[in-house]
Image (tube, rainbow, N blue to C red; front, side, top):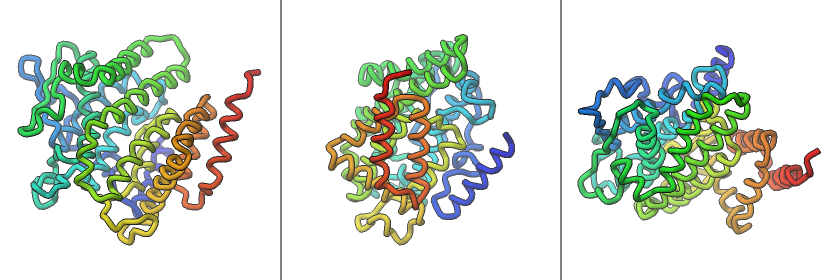
Length: 362
């Protein structure tokens, strides 16, 4: 296991030499500055007040969730970082390092190096989208007792945007009932499966199904943030839409987004906010890996648009079994990480996978 970990870190180092750095020592940026457990931030009379408009504090919510759910994730494998929820802190780390949590209006210095670099702006589309993948899972974890019994939590509201973000479990449940139920179901599923006699392979598949279902629901609910896209260049707006779609492609494969599996897929993402004249794969100050990843995302979005959504529908249909989903994961990795991968062959691969799914069971 140590050999696998070492080889993975070497591969990540090679990728980092040409792309944005989103990890330190193999973990999300400033991970060691974040409290390990919720007990290190004791609540006041059972009420824990959190301030998710600071990078370290938002990251702490995800770290607490990871540590609290690790015991339920033994079916994922024997390693220390097999929890599939690692994709959430890694995503936040990339957003922070690439400057996407900063104020895009330049009306404040929030998130900029010239101001408070760990500040998260409520005017950032990316920060708003991520709210539904950090604060919402946290509030559901508190409500379901996943983080401990007898705890309640309140989110500190920011002046001027109080109506834009829900700030307690009850508030979020009223505004986003279906989303909160998805996360509740995920956490309850973890607890139920931990005492189940099902084989680990079946437990793993059920956990990943529930997790990705909740994460995709978070992304769909983040459509509430759409108006904030106006603060960005056209290329960045396009990339933000593609980001949501690409996550749905990944979700359909039920990827076990452990630390070692998720990081390589995030490292090639653009290490800065895109400007008006950026056109992949020829963006001079981005690496070859970043240009390639952007080009692939643009290509997939274009194909899905031309086919009026059929590409995404075909992909979901093709992910009909565990072997098919494993092949789908390999295809997506090759698309993003391997510049020589023939994108023209993707459609034929999907047709083969879909036809295999439609064959009668022997």
